[in-house]
Amino acid sequence: MEIGQSVVFTIPILGGIPVTTTVVVTWIIMAILTIASLIVTRGWNQVPTGVQNFVETIIDALNSFTKDALGEYWASFAPYLGTVALYLILANTIDLFGLTPPTKDLSATSALAIMSIIVVIIASIKAKGLKGYAKSFFEPMPFFFPMKILDMFTRPLSLAARLFGNIIAAFIIMGLISKVVPIVVPAIFSIYFDLFDGALQMVVFVFLTMLYIEEAVE
Image: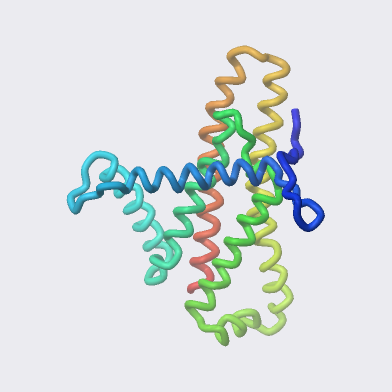
């Protein structure tokens, strides 16, 4: 049972840049999402039917949920939240196809968390202006400044550690189950850990990101 990320190949520049399984699988997920979007959106009509109707229903539900949470700023952040949701649902469940989930790598979850916090900062500046954003570090009292700075570091750490911890825990448990009871039982538990738990962790990550954005634009 391997927990660390193995190097698939090395790019022979700058002394050699190692490309791990995390990067390769992420490229595969990006390719899947890109190709799927091109195929699904081909030949769309004004009146949706079939797959178009299904996709638009999901998008409308996400937009509605985001609009309720973020108000007038929803349109700027719904695409990001939707993209993260699509990436995570694939990244968390791709083990079903024999590939290593990128979210099993703390560097991948950290990158996602840092991107989300950058989006939160942009949301705050967009809503309050640069001066208002700087002023918010001293509200409601000036001595809150150290805690506000600390909060900027603890939020991405929490997002990254929560996602990584849940995915790696599921991976370890599945590995132990496979060694103890190698037939039938692992497949049953895989339904929970690879599908349900993977989808749940996607929802938690996206929901927390949305919550942070909501706080930023208030």
